[in-house]
Image (cartoon, chains in turn brown, blue):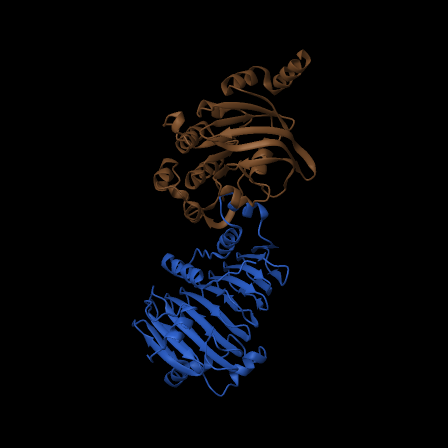
Length: 250
Length: 365
C-alpha cells in the first residue's frame, strides 16, 4: 500500500517572476518527520507556501501530489482539506476575528480544550487573532491551530524563530502530541515537514530524515542529527563545499 | 399593547424589537399609529410626544432648540407635519436603569412619509439605555422616514442610544438628531445599518460641555444600489470635553460617504476619529471625510482613515486552515463589523453583537 503523503517531483517555483525553487524532489511517507535545514533566504518557506498554493507562488514546472492527488488546479482550502496544516512563520493579524471564533470554525479535534490549557492559551481566546501577540504567543496559537485542524501532514515554518527557550519546549511538546510521538513508529499516521535555519528544534522533536536546502535545491539528505552536527561545525558553506567535493570526486 | 401578527413580529425582530425581550420601557409605532407606550420601571417616564406636550407646558419650549426648524427641508417637513408622532422619554434624577428602553418605528403603508419628533431627557446623574429600531415592512416598495430626535443629557447623566435600521431598496431616510451633553455627562450613540436603502443621510450633532464625553460608533453594510451619507459632528464646548467617532463601513457595491467632524473650542479637550472602510466590489465607493478643527493649543485631536479591500494575506491564511473562500470572507467581514464599545455595559454589548449577528445577511461577492 502506498503510504506516501507528499510527493514532489521536478518542482520549479517562482515568486514575482524570479525562480526560487530550481528543481527539487521530495517524498514524505506516513508517520515520517522531515526536517529541512537551509540558510536564510534559500527558499525554504517558498516550498511550504507552494505546497498550499498561496497567492504569489507560481509553480512553473514539476508537480506536487498530496495523497496521490495533483494539487495543480486546487485552491488553498481544498489542499488544506486533503489533510494539510501549516504553522506560519509570520501569521497575519486578523482584526475582529477572535481566536475562539477561528478555532470553532476549523476544529476537528475532540479534546481541544485540554490542548488550549496545555498551551496556556485560555486568556487569548477572546483576543483578536494574532493581534498584539508576542513571538511565543504567535507560535503557540499556530500550534493550537494545527491541533484543532488535526492534519495528516504538518508544514511547520521556522518553529523556533522569535521564541524563547521556555516557549520552544511548550511548542515542541504540543507538536509531538500532534505527531503521536508517544505511539510506536508503525502506528503513527501523521507526518511533518519542518523548516529551520537554526536546527534548535531538533533538541525537542525527533526527526527521521534531514535535508539541506540551498540555492533552490535539496543538496543533501541524511540523518538529521548528523547533518545538524556538520552544520554546527562547518556552517552551510561547509555543505556547499562538501557537495562540490563529491562532484569533483565523481 | 395591540396584538401583532406573526409577519409583523418577524419584521420588528430585524431591528431588535422583540416583545419577549426584557426591557424597562417600550414604544412602538407603525405609520401614524402608536401601538404601545409603556414603562415597567418607576424611574422612566415614556409618553407619546403629543400626550407629553399636554401634560408638561414647559416641553414646548424645548422643541427644535437642538435641531433648528430651518435646518433643512426635512426638518421643516417634520415641523409642519399635520400629525405629531413621536415619543417623550424622561429618566428621573439619580435613577440608573440597566435594562434598555426599546423603541421602534415601522413603515407599513406604500409610499408613506413618516415624520417623527422625539425628546429624550436624562436628568442629573441618571443612566438610560435606548435601543431604537426603524424598519419598513417587507412588502413596502417606497417611502420616507424623517425623524427629529433631541437629547437633553444633564450634568453627570449617561445615555447610550443604539439605532438599528432595516429599510428597503426604495426607502429614503433622513434622521436629524442632536444632543446636549452636560457637565461630566456621557452620550454614546451607536448606529447599525446592514441592509438596502435607497438613500440615508444623517449627521447627528453633539455639543459636549466641561468634562463630558460623546462617542459615536457606526457600522454600515451597503449592498449594491444603496446610498449612505452618514456622519457625526461633535463640538467640544467645555474644558476637558472629549469625543470619539468610529465608523466601520463595508461596501458591497453601495455608495457610502462617511463623515466625522470634531470641533474643539476649549482647553484639554480630546477627540479621536477612525473611519475604516472595506470594499468588496468594484461597483460603489467609500468616501471617508474626517475633519478636525482646533481652536485651542491645549487640545488633542487625531484621526485615522483607511479604505481598501480584504487583505489577500488574511484570506490566504484562513483558507490555509481549510476554510472555504466565501466563509473566510464572511469571517473577516463579520470581524470588521464587530462593534466593540468600551463605554457600553457588557450585557448591552453582548445584546447588540447578537443583534448584528442575527440581522446581517452578507453576500460577500
